[in-house]
Length: 144
Image (cartoon, rainbow, N blue to C red; front, side, top):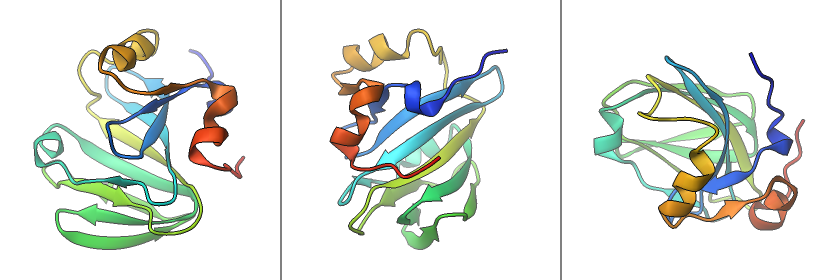
């Protein structure tokens, strides 16, 4: 067993979409990360990815539109959302502040290994932000 403190974990750019994540837990049956979506950040729903995972989202701070297929669901700190497998899911931050949430995947993405994620992100051309620099990129994070 290992404990990871999210403030000590580097962040990876999800894609070219203004969405960054800090991987926390990678197991045989579960994968979880803390996501940060700066003001104006958008990740479109992905029908192909939706077929792979059942998701659980828990809002930590801010306000966000969850996009389930084409329906927008307003989410605020303290809200939890279940996203069933097969439901395309995306997010958009139309507010002025960074939004943070925990997203958990079951089953985990294939070949997820916390030790090799950084190199994988670099190989895919994604931005990797050192833990001490995350707020410089995504804006202030006010928890924990």
